[in-house]
Image 1 (cartoon, rainbow, N blue to C red):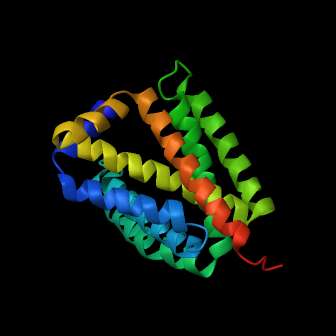
Image 2 (image 1 turned 45 degrees about the horizontal axis):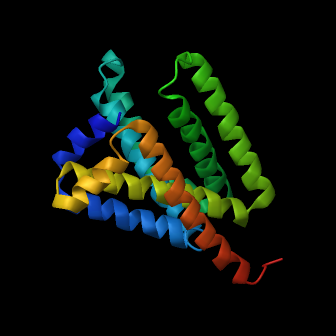
Image 3 (image 1 turned 90 degrees about the horizontal axis):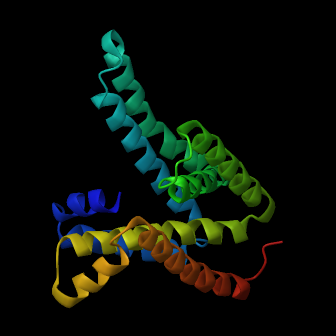
Length: 206
């Protein structure tokens, strides 16, 4: 998986790596303060990806026009719903993080696809329940993990585009999937700790 990302990243250049790193720092360090806006950003990304998949799929046959219409509705509708229903948007955002963490951890294992999906749903349910119970604290965790993923994605893109000693050092951290997961965990933990400290200083709205 990491090699695929490196090949993809080599075609994007350093601008994309800087964008991902900056986005990761915004998510990871300011996430709980901006969580409503970041949930809308997530909704836009999910909507665009869904629209692209629907538009490029050849499985719909005579219903291709309906599939494209659905794609456009996703692009427009998901961000509006995320803005109008911010709490549930963040709950869904947390569920996505829970699902993806399980998939990433099990992706290199021999676990059957159906079992991975079911375990991913369990992870999503746990993350959503955590947010419903803990609110701001879970927003720190969810956005911190987002930030860790994005920063490491930027590092992978930087390694793909070269860059001397720095690029080689980054390449060592992201050269295989296990190393990438560890790097994501480290960056996520650092940013969660920083956000948590910031949250502790903020007045409790209750």
